[in-house]
Length: 281
Image 1 (cartoon, helix red, strand yellow):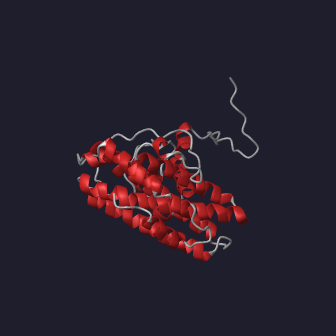
Image 2 (cartoon, helix red, strand yellow):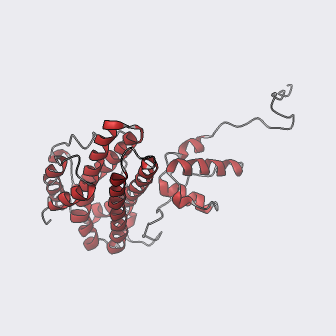
Image 3 (cartoon, one colour):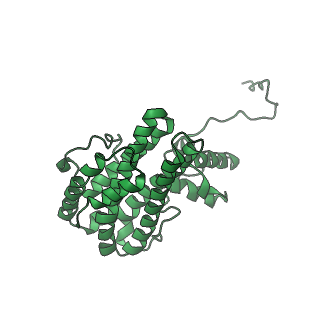
């Protein structure tokens, strides 16, 4: 069999360029903390400031430079993970349930409380909704951007209030590493609230709005992933189902005041309204 003739822009010694392998196509499905962990392992600096698209490109480039696809390993924790590996604590090692393949309806059309399951189910649904809102906001302009941003503020306000007033106290009381886990998640939530207020004050049409929104998106998505891995799964193991269902009813009953809030209200006002709407668990 005759050898392949080189292309016009290829010297005789060049090998044909390989198409991306399946491992590379799977890179984008990885979580932010997984991408950062693999890049740090490969000695790539500055990953803490990269968005997901940048992390994906950098990891693919690293895979090419090694002349082989790096295995896509499961990384247990991210940049702010507080649970050490293999510590034997049930709080962080409960099996993670499979997420639904399809995204859920937007927050503006909530289902009746009895269809939400328990309070963890509500938070998982909201994690998906937040991802949808960030995706839509990324390409929205004008009035559509304003409406979506107002919806994002309301959803984050409700979501963080459910966590801070209903779920985090349970984690502190029931999980062996609850204080450390909740302290880390609360710090991230406080920062997200501050970043949201800065976006509001910056203005939706400012040149820096898109970049700052992307930073907030990455932080919120990573925060949610860590909650699911280090807090939610463990609570399902440690807390009776009846108690989690009771908290779901409280959470749903307290959202009406927030969903009807004025779109023009500042984020700190919406967050304050959300917290005032929740009774003691």
